[in-house]
Structure formats: structure tokens, C-alpha cells
Image (cartoon, rainbow, N blue to C red; front, side, top):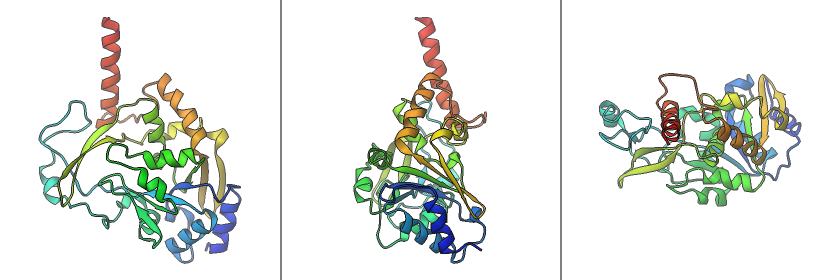
Length: 272
């Protein structure tokens, strides 16, 4: 069984300056048995890194309209049943379970601040400036702030399919984003700039190998990746290959929408 001391020792092996901010993604179960569970893991994380942020995205409040922009990776009019079950977004709505229990523990921490985005919120501890940067139009602004501060991505027992920060590289490379709609007590908000699918992000693993710091804690592989270097590597890869990092699922509406846009642009250029 892993102890608090085991976790602290493992994080120290990464050799990261504890004053550098981190955005973390974690699977508690990947560690094996941890004495004290998620509370111990969070305590050890906060003892090792002063400033911590996690996505606390919410999907239960999303609705599907009858009509909308073309090629938006969405089948309009398909959400009649889901729309009836949609919940109003509030600041105390739990993070989606896909975010992992550690993300929810961060949201509930007494020192945490959560952004107000009704779909792509982030919660941070000692990161109020990063959290405040987010707007409806710039949902990835907190990650950009961490990048500007020479921050790190911390993958704890998960792979790059959980690495939200790769979406920032997609944005900087000019990749298509999406519009979604969120139900709140005040209004239905149109949310631009939403991210695509991350199921193909493990294609980035080899490209990032040289800058990735790795260690093992219990059964979990821990990866620390410097944000600036990661984005610098991935942006030209996406620009040179517009289909890079997309998933291969023929049924994925967002990846297919990106392919459709690129194919249409290629066709228009060839017609010229």
C-alpha cells in the first residue's frame, strides 16, 4: 500500500521546480492501493507543487439545438431526450466523472478557485490569475497562462488522451474548433472555441519523448511535460499534417468535421 511518503518521494524524482505551476490529470486507481485514497494523493501533490490546476469540465448541462453552423461535429435535432435531462450549470456542479476523482477533490479544496465557463471550467489552487484569464471566447486561456509561466503538464497514471493542453497546440496551429451550447439558470449560452476529440493524442507520445520526464509511483507511470516545449513541438507537426493527432474512428463527428474542412480547402485550392 502506498503511503504519503511514497508519493512525495516519487514526485521529487521528477526534479521539477515546485514553484512551477502544473496542470494535472490523474487516475487514482492506476497507483494501486493508496492509504487515505484521493485525499492523500492530493495532499502529496500540493506538498510537491505549489500551484495546481485541473480541468473540471461539465457535460450534463450541454444541449443540442435544432439548427446551427455547418460542419460543427454535431447532429442537430438529435438531443431531444438528452436535452430533457440536461441540468443547469452552477459553480458547484461536480466535475464530470471523466475528469477523475482528483479533479473533483481539487474543486472542493478550500483554497481552490473555479472558473465560470459553463462547459470547460478549470479549478486551481494558488492560480487565481490563470483562472481569471478564461472567458467564454477563450476557454483555453488558463493553459496559456501556465505556458507563459513555464508550467508543466502532469500525467499521473493516464496517457495523452487525457492531456487537455494538446488542444492549445491545436488552437495555435489553426485547427478548427467547435461551438456547443450550455444550459444555465440565466440563459442558454453559445460557447465558441470548444475543443475537438483527444482520442488520437497518443500519436504525440514519440514526438514528446525527449522532453518527457518519467517515473513510477506504485503501479502508476508519472509523466511531466514542459508546456512551452510541448506546444513548440506539436504546432508545426499539426501545421505540416492537418490530420495529425486525429482519431481514426469513422464515427467520430469532430475528427471527421476537421477532415471535411481540410478536404474542402484542398479542393478549393486545386480548383484555383
